Image 1 (cartoon, rainbow, N blue to C red):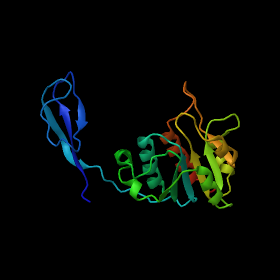
Image 2: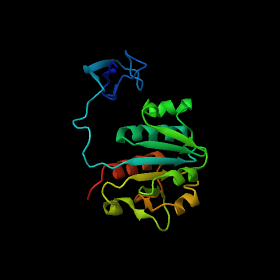
Image 3: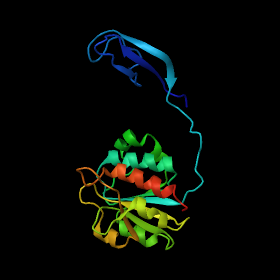
Length: 215
């Protein structure tokens, strides 16, 4: 696939000086969208397709993700993109969670929904019945008994496979799923809000648990 090419433009009005790249729908610009002044290209065209300097840190563990009763296609698409980047083994879409068959997931999944193995299950409890007994079941949820993910992750046995569970954006994780969890982790919240967007929380937990497989 050919990489996308972009061009930086800069407003020539010294009181404005807006600087921004073209997007995929507009290739040529002449006037500033803020003040209407002349726009000129700045620098050479560039590509956003970059190859990372490494492919893996080496310290990884087998991680699967269970999404129970999520309601937002945007959140699900974003989680699939994260799952692709982290090399997640499988995503279980449970309950009312939209699956990659939903057209709106393409907006945030950007094709990752086609590269990550997934399955749909009407009842998340059925998934837990079939999970290997060796798998550590981890819920990401703020409860009175939740442990700090970053403080406790070092105590997880190296190489231990993990299933990460995330729940509904409003009601959280099903209480029966919490009961069946081996560990319940939360993320530190130092501001005025008590929780993060589920896709953001998923991204943090997925990368933390995937790439800290040894102490």
